[in-house]
Length: 180
Image 1 (cartoon, helix red, strand yellow):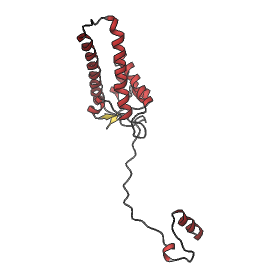
Image 2 (cartoon, rainbow, N blue to C red; image 1 turned 135 degrees about the vertical axis):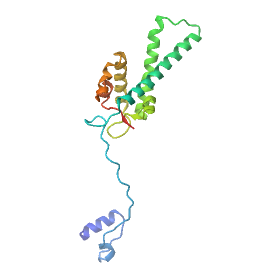
Image 3 (tube, rainbow, N blue to C red; image 1 turned 45 degrees about the vertical axis):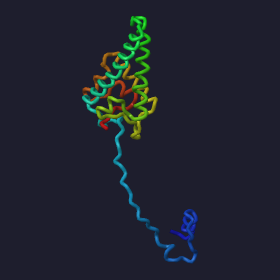
Image 4 (cartoon, rainbow, N blue to C red; image 1 turned 120 degrees about the vertical axis):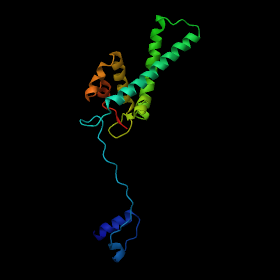
C-alpha cells in the first residue's frame, strides 16, 4: 500500500500515520473477529424447483382456516338470533359481506405480518417472499382473492397442488407455501 493511500486511510479512520515510516504503520492491521457464517441461501418459493409445502399440510391449513370462517359465520347467526331477529333470505347479503370482510382481515393481515394464517401455523407451513420476509399486503391480498375464487369454484383451482403444482392463490400471489 502506498504512503499516500495509508495517510488517506489513516485520516479516514482517524488514525495518526507518521510520515517517518514506522514498523507499526507499515504492518497490516489484523483484528481478531469472530464471524458468524452466513445462513445458507434460501430458494424463493416461486422459483421452479423450489420445495413447496406438501398437499397434506396445505389441506390441513385450509381446513383449519375454513373452520375459523364457519365459526365466525355461526357466531354472527347466533348473535342475530339472540336479538330476536328472524334470519331470512333478506339478510344473506349482509352475512356474506360480513364473512367476506372477516375473511379479508383473517387472511391478509397475518400473511403480511407473520407470513402465515392460523391454519398455516398449525400445519407448520409459511408463505414468504423472495427475501424470506412475509408477503407484502398486495401479495397477501392477491393470495386471499385466489382463495375466495377457489372457494367459489368448490376447490377446483387448488387441484394442481395434488400433483405438486401451484394453486390459483399461489399463481396470483407469486409465492407458494413452504415448510417452515
